[in-house]
Image (tube, rainbow, N blue to C red; front, side, top):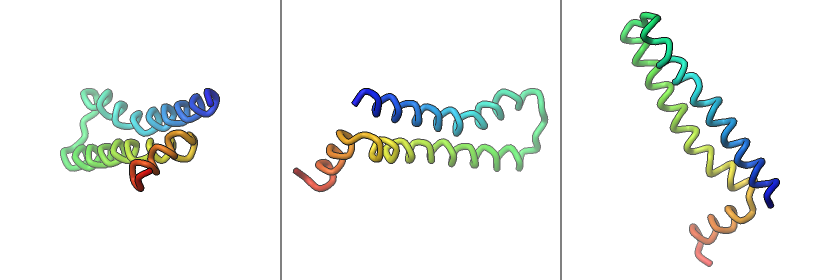
Length: 80
């Protein structure tokens, strides 16, 4: 059980870092690099969508990797 939990946490953390990094890099370099307003708004919207996608992906990862989470989710959705 601990191995599966560690694996699920590692995958979730890896995806979080992968999906969060572009937004962080943009915020870090934006004071040094001038982006016109249109490109800046498009990138901001894109990064928000990617960050929301990360929040959607996390329960899916847990569902497919952790039996206890899967059983609890089924009970929540379909009753006992």
